Length: 361
View 1 (cartoon, rainbow, N blue to C red):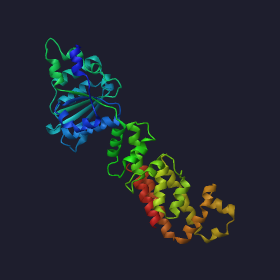
View 2 (tube, rainbow, N blue to C red):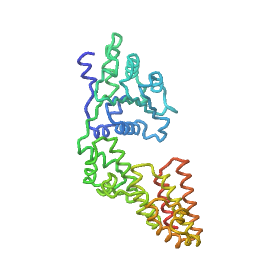
View 3 (spheres, one colour):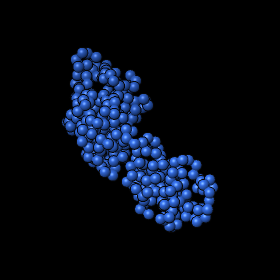
View 4 (cartoon, rainbow, N blue to C red):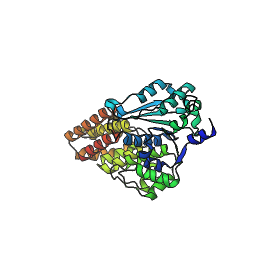
């Protein structure tokens, strides 16, 4: 490719914020090649252009189509791009790993862009560190004997952009936007950054954990960041059972959030709750008072020191409750167990409802 062509097709550097802010203007050319390493950022870019190009069509399933160049399905990609969308509505076609196209596939893609369908917005994504446009398009097919104005036609149909790496300030601004609906100060965002390696993917995961952890208060503080990073008290499952037996729902939810950040704990907590209230129910039987220490442990299936420390709370709960109330608790535990094992959805919501129901009995 001639030097002039390389210059025209070189990626244009642009800040991430400017890219999103200028999306409406950029979308006037209905083909886009972006060099962006982080999937979370490329997903946000796709969402932004989808909303602009389709006027936020709610039927995303039928109007945004994903491909991967690794799959070697160039015919499917070009057919999808060329065909009009459902009821002639606009659609977005996204292709990842575009450097993996073979030579003939690059030529076909290049030819399509010069004659692209105005009802399709094509987004090509490369997550490689090297931003080399010539490795994505067939240089010899842009200008040819039959198409001497090919470069002009091609460049007039596509934007080639490479978002800049985030500065610390830009990363902080991005994080604040990710906490939409939650109160968080810039100081707390920068406190969170102290525990990160500045990876948007990993930071997004931390954001979701914190949003779950602070679901009730809708406020992210330095203390909640510390808890999520294991700096504060490391609660155990026994602490959770203790909080439930004391009917302290706020503390029980707090402990559940903390330990659930480290592992999938819901099914185990259901088992522990079932065991705890089985022991409570048995303690309501007057004959339990006649059992010696070992026999009582065996009857209640108390095998660990942590469980034995909960025995006074078992007795207190048993003396202050009725058989009907404890049966209601068993029903709530059973229903939650079935929901966790048989359906999707938010585990936190199911556990929050269970905790609230038990503590309100």
